[in-house]
Image (cartoon, rainbow, N blue to C red):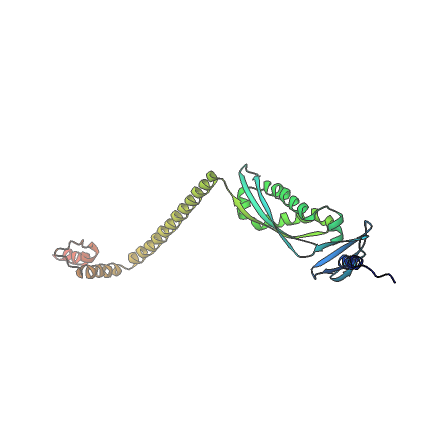
Amino acid sequence: MFAPSFMTVLFVIFVVVYFLSSAIKILKEYERGVVFRLGRIIDLKGPGLVIIWPVIDKLVKVSLRTVTMDVPPQDIITRDNITVKVNAVIYFRPMEPIKAITEVEDFYYATSQIAQTTLRSILGQSQLDDLLAKREELNADLQKVIDVQTEPWGVKVSAVEVKNVDLPPEMLRAIAKQAEAERERRAKIIHAEGEFQAAQKLADAAKIIASEPATLQLRYLQTLTEIATEKNSTIVFPLPIEIIKPFLDKMGKQP
């Protein structure tokens, strides 16, 4: 009998191990595998154990988890001709693995490029005040536009968030001056409202005193009491004519 040599056995073991490692694939719960047989798509596999034919089959893995991708800072000229640098973050996930593999060469890179161009396009149509104050509305517009463009690739864009808006130094100084002027305006308005309310209260008090002359005398006596508590050697205090008027009228009636 012919006894196989050691090299022959080693070669057979190598072929069997290679065949098993190439034929058996394990896909995680969040992964799917697009199987190509002789260049044609035959099925979508996973998750779990997947067996393919080596050499004639090729399996391409696609992760179904949400991808968080930073959009590089973009130089944008706003509608009111102000140059700003804006960066953002985009959240997306492939919903249809077959389209994500066959419709575009690299859906990660393609989604990033679409996000950059859309960021410049949408934000370039906005004014600086809207870019700073209406962030949620702009995020929603960006998400809708990018999602429409990535839909043919089977990619769903769930959210787009503008992270930072870097302004030029001269614009920062102008905004600081505007904020300071706004604070001064509010302070003056509050002060004027306080003066107006105080004037109203004084006018109401004057009407009450005019209708009841005795209240003036009570107020005069109260003021004397407050002054008497202080350590003053000499007090000069005007005497209202209303207090001594009854005595003057009485003396004028005497013959």
